[in-house]
Length: 351
Image 1 (spheres, rainbow, N blue to C red):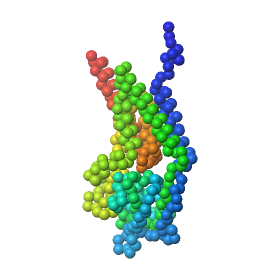
Image 2 (image 1 turned 90 degrees about the vertical axis):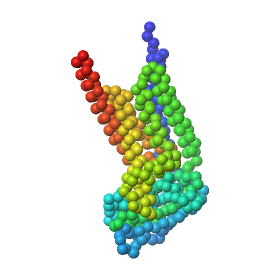
Image 3 (image 1 turned 90 degrees about the horizontal axis):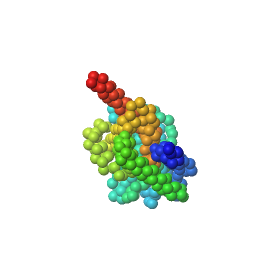
Image 4 (image 1 turned 30 degrees about the horizontal axis):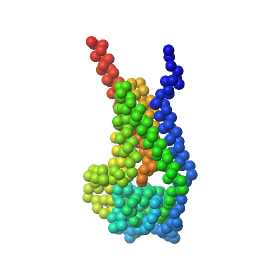
């Protein structure tokens, strides 16, 4: 006697996948539907009635940087905006040799917080005057905000029309909605974990392989910036990807910021290459497209969940980096599985 579909119940994997799609839709609607922030008091504008020109040319009387220190008060979030233009800024051999606007949070003793660097804009070459803006959370213990526009290249000009700092708060109900959606994601993660570990009792090891790689990658992707700061700063000060061994002062700060960026992107490549490799091995031969679809979905979800994390920023660039890295891992696994199959088939034919 055969049982009906209702008796057997629906497979767990499609239900978990459907729940992931639904939560993804709700998360995007939550963040990109009504505005997340509203102004908290009056903003402060610097250089409101003048255009300041900064020069990287040697021997020029024009300064190469300007700084303003802004009191953060009780602000929870801050938006920094500016109008900037670049003329003939040549980067040179080092990525950090450019024009840029940075906002660095300062402790009460004026010590800068390089664990949460905020590069509002990077400019090189010739760029017409346009608006640049960045919004970030004020970390606990931060008392002031250092705004610095600077030219680190040896040529060219950076023009600054205005700098503005606007304190923000999240709109009423946004935090409650975030907590609800986070709770749903946690429940989904527990459901996926239960499905994977219960499959081990039925000797389903392939989902466990994908889980063992994907779970740590997801955790590292969504941890707040301050949680991984000691590790990131320690590596960035030892691994000189920006070639600033002899740099000092502002150049050393810029090189450290560039190192943090480069190391973060290198981490993306390593993690998602491993994820693509694990997904392809878990799916087996002949299912490279299914593995690619899972890897793409995983990369999108991992990047999207950064919107919940303190001072983490989701970007399409990172999504593309995740996908291309996952494709690399899938290609490695596909080639490995193909040659392994040929090797095993050859041995069986000779025996």
